[in-house]
Amino acid sequence: MVLTKSLLMFIGIILTVGGSFAAEDHREHIEDSLLTVQEVTQTCLECHEDAASEVMKTIHWTWKGDAKPVHAHKGQHAIGKMNVFNNYCIAVESNWPRCTSCHIGYGWKDETFDFENEENVDCLICHDQTGTYIKNPKGAGMPMKNVDLTAVAQSVGLSTRENCGTCHFYGGGGENVKHGDLDQGLVNPTEDYDVHMGNGMTCTECHTAEEHNIKGKSLAILTGEDNRVQCIDCHEADTHNSKVLNTHTKKIACQTCHIPVFAKSKPTKMYWDWSTAGKDSSGKKDKYGMDTYIKKKGTFAWGTNVEPEYHWYNGSTARYLKGDKIDPDKVVVLNSPLGKGKDKNAKLYPFKVMRGKQIFDTKNKYLIIPHLWGGYWTHFDWNKAAEVGMKAADLEYSGEYGWVETEMYWGLDHMVVPREDALTCKNCHGRGDTKRMDWEALGYRGDQMYKKYRD
Image (cartoon, rainbow, N blue to C red; front, top):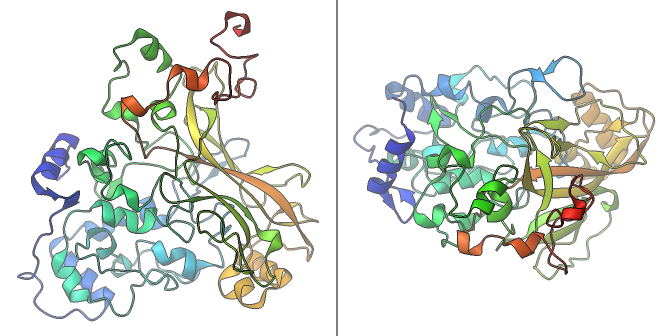
């Protein structure tokens, strides 16, 4: 059965207690002890016959989308978390057991993983209601050995914020490291922390699901306009009482005014320099209590209550793909929102921009996929890490490497504030130090409040 948004909201009202869906007691259905994860999945499929086959058609399973055109590239490309670069731990290939610890499956430890085996589907990661189901950070999707699989399977129910947050709050190796707008504060937030969840909503009321395909996409991973969650799915475009504000919404996204800052309580990583890795750590921490250097990973910078950067976005994304040539003297942009102010479908959106420095092949002039997990993090030899990683990625390695600055864009959609806390005119317009907008970077001669700068 396909649940409509209104029905989902009704179920949320009836079953929600403290922001979480109540569990359904499955003890009468599951009486025998379950010793392996495969036994759990087999048991689930006795009643939910199509669940695994549905999951296996989603990007939560495949970690890539359908083949589509990619801006400035020939042909079509099926891309996703499986095969795109980032400037955190760089790439999945050759680093599977660590990266795939949050995969919605069991045992993706190398390139031989069987994506067609239904018994590899992990039902519990999205449906556990005990709070005790924990994946092994080094286990290629397997749970910790001390998890009571029978007790967890007997508890399952509709997905909660905690279920979603188990993976999405902890991307990049720690809470709020990657996104900047997703952390544990969203489990039971106040209204000013997130106006939606602070009023009892759950993730699945916006990220609705049909046959286990969950609506939503990340600008950091996929490209194209399909499967997006947008504010106008629920809100009228002309929702304000003010004509001026309603005029603004024609070219300014809701998030721009209603997400004035991100990383409200937990710091998010803003810069990562891999080139400094390999030296013994001093153990130094910043004012947030976060590490500023780790031998395995290099140098970091963190931020809280960070003001977003603003760019035009028409729903499509430019992308660096594996093997693309780079100019080492320029910043390599791994992904970027496309659009200009005059584009019909473009609006001004807020972004977290992650910056860093990562390894590249100085002769072939493309980014390197280094073998980190079980590789560099063990022997601290970048040359060896590059050889193994590039072999796994089926790319030639010249034997010579260097370092290049990179940028990555993360769209902001959470930590939405109520209208009384949203940006005001003076935050973006007028004189003083409170202005957020870089008008020239946005394609204008100056502040659009002033007639002399308007075209």
